Image (cartoon, rainbow, N blue to C red):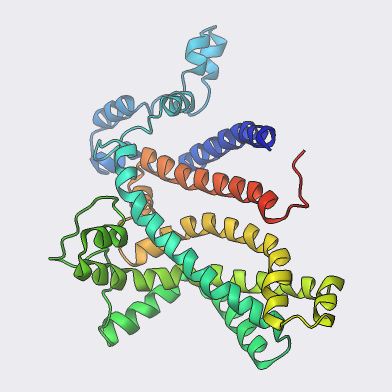
Length: 350
């Protein structure tokens, strides 16, 4: 098992390098010049060139072929991409082009807000999706099954941005029950210990702050949880239906086992492997979907931060934030793969 984990970690190296390369390459395909975005469209050309030189944007993106022709190997490899890789090896994500603040420092402040939103969304998705899928499989072709499948189809079809806007119109504008955006109301003071507002409110015993944090979380969590909830429901139902047709399930019924014992002790345990897989995939999807959700609800996480950085052509922020999301997605799937051994003893990693 240990050897398998080590091999998987080593195999992650080319994957991570590929992620870095793709993020770097696609970032450069965004139209516009960061130097012009900083100085304005009417800035003098010499000022633009000076900023480009300071930021290293005057270097080739990958390799300098002209330097290679001249026999200058050091100049050949002295590119934006190589410099970026060198900074990454020293745990340096660079500084924001506009604010000149270290990207890693801002990530540490904003990432807990995104994690709080994504993990609570996944908790709701699993809490509703798994029981709904089990109930649909146990009562196949019933009214409950039809309602569950129709609901999951609607859930997976609704765009996050549309659902978010409709919820704002209903709960914030029409009913005025919930705040339309942000993470906390003005005047609410939360002592930041972990930077997770729910945990910090509980640790401080501040019930007013806890209620306020939950109110701000309700709409973005529901909007973000809808699609993974629908996918988990359908996967759980499909996997349970396959297992319920196995011989050992019929044997358990023949022995007089209670329905709930058959479902939860025998069927669910064996049907949960593909469900765990889809949950791992959806965690990465939630972090990516947080870009839209955080923008709609003005949530101060890395999704909103990346969106603003894209508009401002702030390369280090976009690269650092996107890379963090990609790394979390990769390592989450690694943990899911390793968990198979504990969920199903029949699986052995040689």
